[in-house]
Image 1: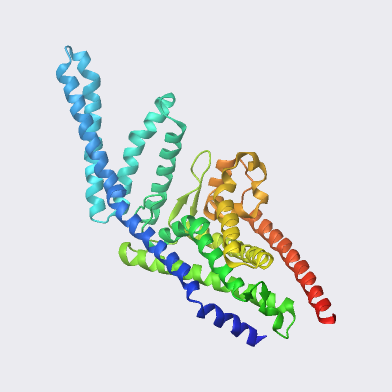
Image 2 (image 1 turned 30 degrees about the vertical axis):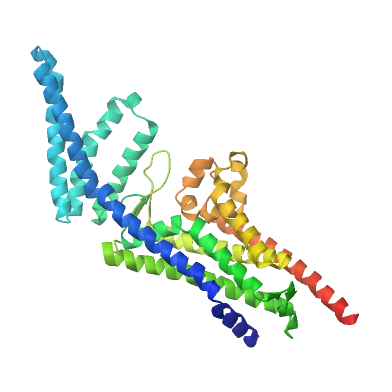
Length: 391
């Protein structure tokens, strides 16, 4: 058994083709970090305050023009009050920017929270029909996020373009796994499983060992190998982001999708839930790739089929409306791990059964189903070998 394990490891590491997808995944990870770091200069916390100041200056100019063009004192009253309020907002934003430049995040965020309460919240309360539901949701989500950041005294990151260590790691789990990681893993696993096939002949049949043990060893090694590569990419991304932008904290808050947008979950909780869920996804994917590769027995054909199934399914399963009522039963739904854990998937599909607990049980069920299919195929293959030996 040990000799076969060494054989699988050696043949995998000797094949230079296997390192290409790994290098590509590391490259994509670093590219994501570079893009987020570049974008944050124009769309980050301080950049958004500067933009607000510029927009407020434009409003002040408009109000000043309206005051100058007014013919009566009554006509000047409304634009005058609006201009004074805008001046106060500008002054608060300038103070908040100065505090942020000094890295006094708690004080800066408190000023921003005051601005939100004095402007956006008042608009929602007094003129609810003039604003969209998305705007209302965004305002309450931002206010909730700022309150938690004030409590933790953490620097705010831009949602979706995080650059600090722990928040960026979460973004890697969110962005890379459903597409880049799945593509790389499928390519790598197909290569590992087809390297013992020569002219549709399986070299594993020549080993004087139980075929069930050989399959278990090969699949087990592939799962460990694939998950280890994924973890290495996450660690590299975390180290790179921490060196450039700081690590932030595992307690960094993430706003969950809900009707009130007031639910908060920490990066720590999301990572602790996402990694076991994604490990099950990798086990399921590995077993499926093995089964498909064994049945096709051709590297290019098997790779094409595996990429088509896994990449296509993970990208589209939550977007197909006719099956939205049953997506919680499909294993591919949980490849979009962070969307499931933040309830974004449940919100988008209207299926509230898309949860962490459901995902664990669904993936275990499908792993068992694929395990049974592999056992059946193995039994049929063993019977054929016995008949060939007898004849």
